[in-house]
Length: 158
Image (cartoon, rainbow, N blue to C red):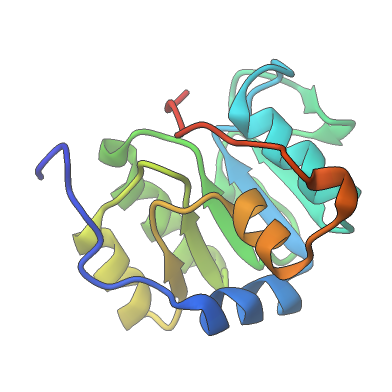
């Protein structure tokens, strides 16, 4: 896999709006317990906007007031979006797990692309977003004055 892989196919604006409008539960793989990290800020933002956030990381017991799970397979209940904050090399295994748990979408954060895994996800019926920040996209759909001027830098994998 090329380290600078670009999405060969990606969700468009309408599909992203649909994903965000219909999702209620977001499992964040690689969610950090450090408030200065992008994954933490995105998780907090999603919580503030009504989403149930499920941290998936073996590194903590609780993040953002939510119990963490070491893997997607151990998450109880349904997951609408699997949001990935991991290096591209980790994506295929995460996508396979997302397919296995019946997630509706896989969302790879800024800078994260894996076309082969994305193709597998689409073939299994999942929606796929690559190299886009879920928080930035949510703000586009639901702009708020409090968000004016806020920026998100490109993702640095945990």
